[in-house]
Amino acid sequence: MRTSLGTGLFHPIVGRDRGTPCFEPLAVERRTRVAKRRCHGTRAVLVRFQPMNISLSQLLKESFQIAWEYLERTGELGDGAVASQFLGDTIEAMIRRGQRSRLALSNRAISANQRFRVSNATVSSRARTAA
Image 1 (cartoon, rainbow, N blue to C red):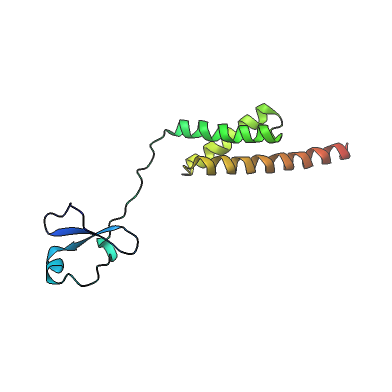
Image 2 (image 1 turned 90 degrees about the horizontal axis):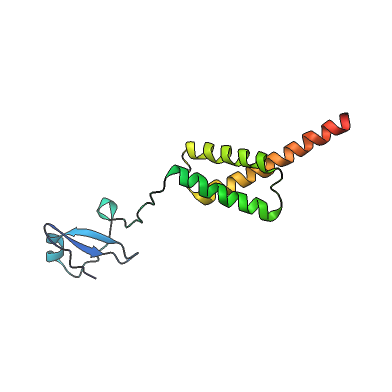
């Protein structure tokens, strides 16, 4: 399948295997039209989605909101002030390390909060039994 973008030394041809466009020299096309056309190596052009440009503060806000709503709905939120501080610090630390996926940030913050609450519960129960 040919596209209408062919100008200059290279002519774009859509590869058979995945439908991705690749560029072959016009001389190769003129010599033989029966030969198999495949995309190899660096000639293949990868079609990618444009990255979303979202501010880090917006990323923090949305990830925090997802984690907060989940913990609130499941009844695992506990003390709101402690949970707010912990979730904010956890998500901020992950953003500083380079994580940019909202769902990954919120899921990891939820898991960290659950581990934090379990460890605090065991420490406080040990303190009660020791006293």
